[in-house]
Image (tube, rainbow over all chains, first blue to last red; front, side, top):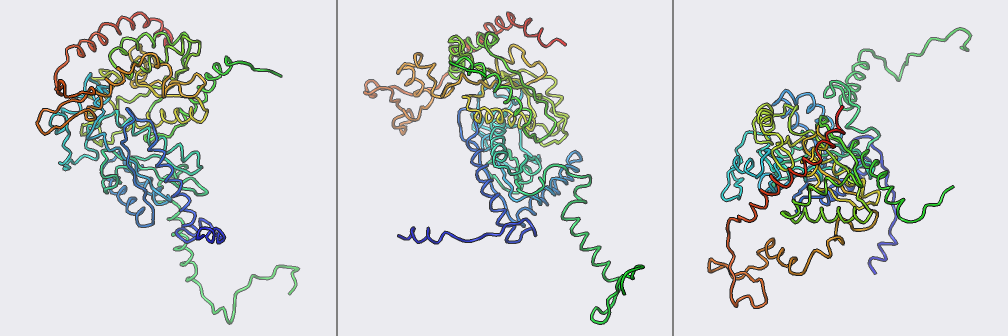
Length: 266
Length: 276
């Protein structure tokens, strides 16, 4: 009976607009993206995997403070490696411009390898490349020492990483199907992993998702970390305010008017 | 005007679908943007070298036997699968990310190691893991595209091994095969082609060996009994661990005697296709 009344109550209206950012109308829009991101993460779970073994975990991250924290971590990483600097700074901007960040991780590549002697990790005919470089006893990898200074504590089981790529691919395919913009990023993955997202994973990839008039992940300009929508808007506020204060009149008494041109009625 | 009747035109059309799937492989997003990926389509009589290489491996590995029997029997019935050979260039890093995922501190050290060790594994290797990610995303998009075209498909490491052995896609150092069709439900899952090969005893033996804890009795004595028959206590059987001469000999024979013989038979013809 209760359900019947609820059904009768099915009415309402929602105004949706992407302006201004983080306003109620924008957050309604973001909620749609969150639903898409949830389906993307489900798709990652259904991707093919060697032996059909479950090995994927994920985090959905959304909210102004949450995205800002990831962006700042990426900016921190950008200065750790010259090869990263430019790209990572650009990608931090993309994070701020996203609606939802999906972090997808593989829980087995560092600890419970396929043990399939495929050779993908080190090019050999057995799994010794992986195990010889890991702390382990009789093939059980001990991951309790987390003091490695590397970004990723390799080596990893590359067969598992291959499965991991399948998972990320499926998430991206669903994004394509649902017409939301998404791209895979190493920067977001590594930053997310260092922040503790996907805590059981040996490798993490970030997939930011957005549904905006302009895809945030393509067609960027040079110096994107300096010249982007947030910066341009802030610049407009700065320049316009200054333009106002360099002149003055009391609008209640007098407002300057354009001069009459010839032939115009007085 | 036209009138297409029967199944032959459906089987032929799988090749056209495969071409569309290759578009998805090349369109797939990359993380690095620097991974070279290539794809070829192969079917019919041109599958014979692949089938021949899989035959000895099938004797040593059950999952390869599945793929081997399925591809071979469909081919022999005149319903050849169409296989997309997907290759990637992943054994060197031009990223300079120094992320450590490969096990080395720097890409430079990895590249030096890779130069000495490339191609030693059954599927190639060593690999830059970020390039493997790009490659795998492309493979996954191929599977997803096939799914959307309603063509049964499976991505196969077994075929990848055959492609590596026979040196198809010589510029790539990881190779997988995406088998497509013939056009019907469940070719590569719940495999009908395997029905006559799998007896009850084989199926049960697989479970006993591969899922041992299901068959293990009380372990408190330190020497767990194994329940492989109805009267499992008379006489009891025990789980043990040991080196298998037979398994190792089989693998050595397959890898170093039988496959090289098949490869030599086909290598000149395949290499000629890639001569520029």
